[in-house]
Length: 145
Image (cartoon, rainbow, N blue to C red; front, side, top):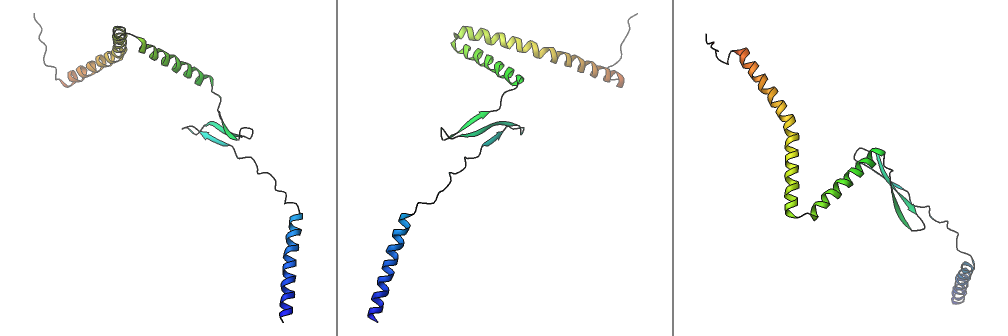
């Protein structure tokens, strides 16, 4: 029985060595490269496409490509840039120059506001006077002879 176990042990050892040698002589399996990562899309607050992120394999990174601007958006961007440059120019003013430009701004703002407010005030005053006269709340008027 001991002889059988030694023979069996020898056969098992030879088989394991043989299988190891056989597996080392084979080439590894061919695995295809993974597909490129998917692109991602971003949307603005109105649900419109705002841009996309596209995978660039040469840089091993995503590249963001914003949606091209419309003519209206380009005009708005230019207006904002002009306003920004104008406001940044105020930083270089002396306090006297700044006070002068602030007073000009206040006067312009007041003039623009008064055009609308004065018109609405006059209309409301007229409406109230007409309503009071219709109700007889204006009193009596005397004519001097």
